[in-house]
Image 1 (cartoon, rainbow, N blue to C red):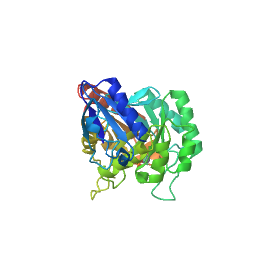
Image 2: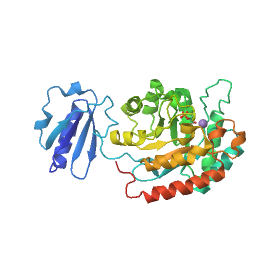
Image 3: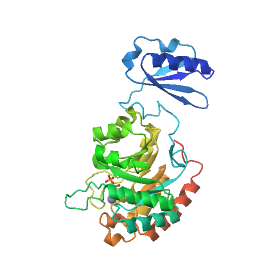
Image 4: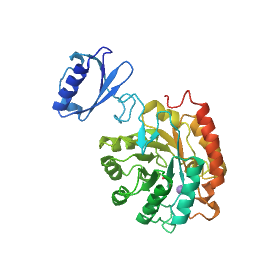
Length: 340
Ligand code: PEP
Ligand code: MN
């Protein structure tokens, strides 16, 4: 439920309502738009009892939120969420490019790629330390050692670091090192992990589950938000369909669909979304043209010999080309970036 205040409502009236709701044991989120102030009510609405909210001074109307996810909707918070990662803004009209290897394999490889993507203009470094591989016999990641290497790469390049967590214990370790944690597709409905990430105060990239509907994905974001962590970046990474020409079917339409439903920033992963290097640049551009706030992309110094996801990894040179094209496109779209 949200309360829409009249355009001429005073700050005192807004404060009075907030205080009243808090006394009932509810929490509030206030969004100030150009004309209207909206008070979002958080918590069990049964606590409201028969309170005639419409009759309180300054109130124009109340709107129930029909969706099962309440906090992630634009009804609850009409203005776009902008997430600050070490000074870089994600969402709200800024391009974000996160790049790096699928997996942290060793120090030299990670640092070499970190420097290359930084020089090409990336805003953050990615690298998997806990790898949820399809086969138990594939490389599983360096775990905490990998996180330490990422932190060293941050020291050298200044790039904020992003990596996946796969369990509550990996989260606890990761919080010591990372600027952003990633929930991978395979864990999008790991509700215990979502709750624990929700209790942390760190930005989260929430990838779409391999077979998840947009509604299930938004509900996963609600799990995180309902624990108090509002810093969520939604990441489309392709879904399972009958198509076999690509690794997954990258659902570009999810970008404008999400933008119509939520205030959260949206990025796209064209690497896992296609599984094919040649498709990464075209689909990155498609994502931006569709209104995405950025991309997360795999880059390797020697894709042929990568320990994971080589066929979809860009070389350092490929990545420099991608950066040039994506920046030109984003700048050309300046008048619409960050708009819904
Ligand atoms: C990844 O980004 O390293 C990854 C494993 O992606 P996904 O969870 O989308 O498969
Ligand atoms: Mn990968």
